Length: 167
Image (cartoon, rainbow, N blue to C red):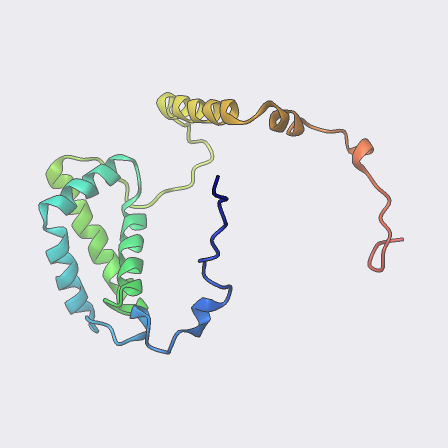
């Protein structure tokens, strides 16, 4: 029976710091140096039917448009399409374009997620959350479930001794 040997074909810690300057897309000059050029690129990209279908699916999951726009512009920075400052300038235009597309498709959206302490989670969302948690609990072995039980603090206290411990 052949023995299975572990492979050590993983990156070495710090390896990401050894690339030449300019080897990464965000380290080279951007493809679209001005906000106008970047907006033109995003408008062309957002006008495709595949993009619109995927965008509507994401918006229907109650993800705010500001989060989607920030994700898009950050991906553009990482791909070397534009710089960070151009991405910040482009974000409001992306939000407005997504709002227009959502209105055209009849999809309800939120622009920013407002933190409301009195906001009640819908029953369907709560049921989905409970179902996911129950599945995770069922997947855990019984030994791990017992370990997660609350333990009395008095039994776990130990006397600390060492150079930096309190007296």
